[in-house]
Length: 230
Ligand code: ATP
Image (cartoon, rainbow, N blue to C red):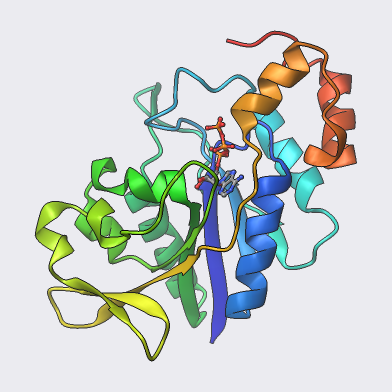
């Protein structure tokens, strides 16, 4: 059984925080692969995204190139209906991913990886109960986003079904059909970096040091991205 984590986001641009939490997840859960999947249209951030999908995908390719366990993924590429761009909902993305693994007859244990800020908004995502049932979950600590009450972020009806399991050191959320969804927390992670702050720093011409992989920084310069900040 292969262990694969879906890692969605805007990656506008990809930065050290993304790579650090992906590496930590690989090590802690012995993952075979992490799929870095930029979302074409992020439902909650559509207005704030600056670089095009193609540029964000290119940057993800560059950011992941040195680690054989990290793969760029097009699973969240642009989608349209009757020529109208559609938002990328994670509940649908994970379902597509599972369907793809099924067609490959691949036995996969699927995880979804995210930072604490994303987890704290999970109840507002599309069809949260169906979404949560698609995979197990790995949540990384992030400065400024408290993870001391993980079940409190769940939609109200699910909160009573989620409890910490000492034996496995993770939360178990009971599904309607009885099988538990596992929610693991990497609380020790504390990467003080965000794409928003980096875009602001780049627009101001500030030094960004090691916060962006060198190949990504070169690409940003070459494509003249983030010269101004929305
Ligand atoms: P922005 O500042 O534009 O909101 P971001 O830095 O949060 O962007 P995203 O691409 O939106 O970057 O993040 C993708 C995923 O990675 C999200 O689940 C987010 O929580 C997580 N993530 C990003 N940076 C960190 C970090 N420093 N620590 C922990 N998780 C992070």
